Length: 177
Length: 453
Image 1 (cartoon, rainbow over the protein chains, first blue to last red):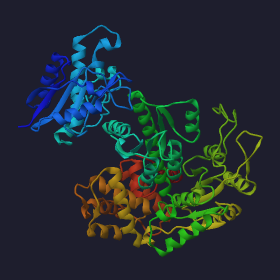
Image 2: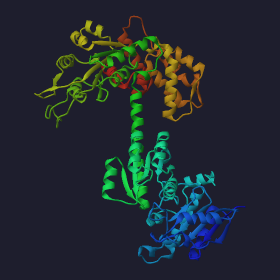
Image 3: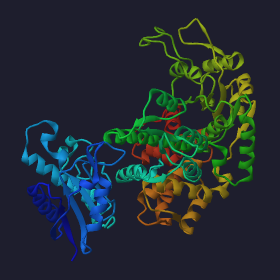
Image 4: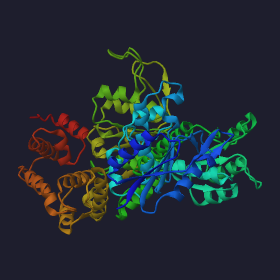
C-alpha cells in the first residue's frame, strides 16, 4: 500500500516534524514513513538571503521513494520563488512533492514571544495545505478551510487544520494524484 | 468563477515565468506562459486571456510596453499588468499611460498579487454578468425573437421593423395577451431611440387623477401630499419612447390633454405654470375597438387620428394556430431553465390539446398554461394529463349560462364574475385563467362593478 513520506532537513525542528507526520497520517488516513533530507544550502541566494523553493522542490522530487504516494519536506529555511518576496511552502500541483518552510511560522520571526502551540498549529495547517496541492486541490474560497490562500501568518491562524466539505468531496473523487 | 478566466504570464526568464504561473495555478486559474513578446501576441490571437502579466524588460526587440500595446490592439478588454525588477518613475508612468492596469515591482508580496488578481477578476465577473443580462434583456424584445411562422404575423413584424426608424406615432391594436407591449418594446429597441428610456404606462390601472399626475408629473404643493416636485412619465421618456397601454380606457379630460401633448409636444405639470417640452415617441396600444368607441362618443376622433398614424393590428392566437407548437417549445425551454426542471419535450397528445384549445387570453394564456403544467409535471415530458386544468377551466366556463339576447359586455361581466368566484376571489389566479393581466382585470371589475367574494 502506498504511504505518505514526511522528510526533514537536518536543521528542521524534530518535534514539528513528528507532529506534522502524525497529523497528516491521521488526517489523510495514510500509513506514514519518515526520511531525512539533505541540507538545502545549494538553494541559497545571497542577494535575497533566502532559499529558492524551486531547486528544493526539484531535489525532493529526485529523492521521493518510488513507492511513496507523496513526499512532504520540512525545512527551517526561509523559502521564496523569484517573483514573490517569500512563500510559506511550495508544492507540485497534482504532483508528488511539496515543501514547507517553518521559518515564518514562528512568533519569533515577527519579534513576538515564542509560542510552541501556535507554531505547531501553523505547521500542521501549512503541511495540510501543501499536501492538498499535491492532490490537485487549488485555493479554496472558504476562509476557514486549510486550502484557503494564506499570504500572511494571520491568515493561517484564522483557518482550521482541516479541509472544508467541498475540498473533501473533491479529494474523495480523487481530484488528481 | 475563477476557472472562466485565463491568464498569460510573459517573461523571458523561464524560472520567473513558471514560478508565477505555478503560483496562479494554485489559486485556481488556468495559466499559460510565453517567453517573448512575439510568442505572447501569437497566443493572444488564439486565446482570449483575461489578464496578462508582462515583464517590462525582454530581449529581441519587443519589450513589455510594445507587447502590451500589440496585445491591447488585439484584445482591448484584457487587463495588462507590467512587472519589472528595475522600477523607475518614468517606466511606471509610460506603462500606465500606454494602458497597463497595474505596474508591480518584483519580487512582490504574495498578498499584492493575490489582491490585484482577485480585484480584476471581480470586475470582469461583474462586466460579464452585465453583458449577459443586457443581451438577455434586449434579445427578449427584438423582432427576430418574436416567435412566429405565420405569414400574417411576419408581415406585421416587417411593418413594425420598418416604422422603428421613423418618429411617427404608432397605434397597436390587439386582444389582451397578444403581445402588444412586446411589439412596442421591439419598435423602441430597433429604432434610433434604443439607448434612451422606454416607459410603459397602463392607462387602465389608474384612476383619472392618478393617471394625470403619473403622465404629467406635479409641482410641489399641487395637492395635499405633493411635498416635492415629481416628473411624470412623459418627462421620464424624454428622448425615448412612451407606451400608453390601454389607451381606449382613458377619460375624456385626459384625451384632451393627450391631444395637446401629441400636437405641441408640450404640457404643464399638475399645479404648474411652466410649460414643459418633451421629445418622446408615442406608441399607443389597446384591445378596445376605437372606431366603435368613436361612434359611441367614448373616444375623440381627432385623438384617434393623431394616434393612428401607423396602425399595427396583432391577430389573436386562434387566428394563427400554426404558431402554437413553436411558442410551446419556446416556453418549455424557457421555463425549464427558470424553474430548474429537466423537462425538454411535450407529447403529441398534449400538443393536440393545446392546438384544440380556443385561447381567449392569447399568447399570455398559453404561456401561463405551459408554466402551470411544468410546475406540476413529474416526468420529463409534458403529457395530456399536465394540461387537464384547461378542460376543467373550459367546463367551468361552459357551465356559465349564456342566454341569447345577452350583450357581449354582459357576457364578459358574467364570465369575469364566474372566474373570480371559481378562483375563490384570487385575482392573480382569475387573471391567469382569463388570460389577461391583473391591471386589465381590475379595470374590468371597476367598470362592471363586480362584487368580489
